[in-house]
Length: 207
Image (cartoon, rainbow, N blue to C red):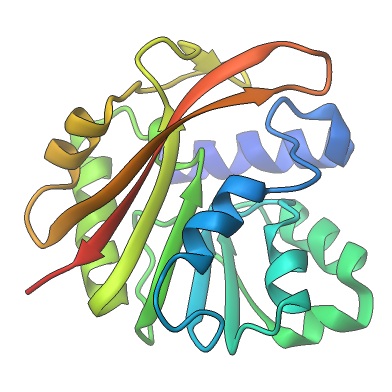
């Protein structure tokens, strides 16, 4: 799927569905917060939420007083909805409308968080581009946190095919420049009561 097609798909999703009408809706992103706050120095760190969409993680990071928070998503409709929800607090966030596989970061971050975006990259060149950009965007000693569908997770999401991972497979895909620090299995319950199995991994950016 091309960048243009991806953008069209996700803009349509976010323009036609409310926040809690999506399978990935999570009112309290507890595991994401736990992994972020496990990084030494939090909350005095810069965090980017990649593929953040309308996730409520940004609300929690702003509330906890993180020094810098950015949200990247290719859907302008999603970012507009998130800004509206935050109201005046949206001014404390850097909003980036871009496809992560073609984005050119202008600064380095301490934490790169991605819940359920990477697994949509089913083509090897897109995955390679994502990892290369993550290497550039994260300072040495920074942390890459990715939540992706587990091996027994769904084969599709939002009508699109996905990749499924174990911690070992995800580490191999991410490749050099990162050290796996920890992994956690996680079951996400959709708003309509279906379970989805995820694996969350936290990597340290190394030289």
